[in-house]
Length: 144
Image 1 (cartoon, rainbow, N blue to C red):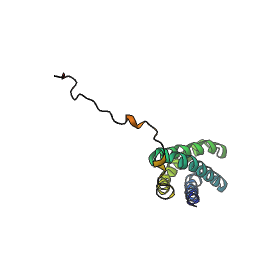
Image 2 (cartoon, rainbow, N blue to C red):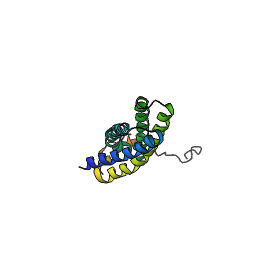
Image 3 (cartoon, helix red, strand yellow):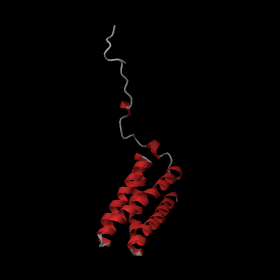
Image 4 (cartoon, one colour):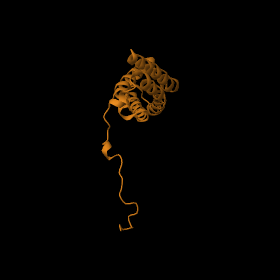
């Protein structure tokens, strides 16, 4: 049920964002707005929230969501819209607004859905090399 709430929250946020960025500025149809919202919601949830958010954290997952939304609107916007400026500005505005909403969605996910998911993940780097200590404080001075 918690995952359904997150999907619903993301879908409603995407509908509002695409309505603002594509319909108000560029006269998109309701079908196009729903299609973009569904596609971005599903891809962003499974790739960004389920795979990347537990591994790379909130800030990096928001950056990935920005570029993911930008790429989706850019690629599929070329199919729906025939104006280059409409696709370019629509993808920039949509990606910026969607990344702003993802900050709040990610904090909701980390607090309510699965808060211990980062503790279970293996680190992406070798922690045995995390600290390095040297024996000499002054390399020019010789040992006596």
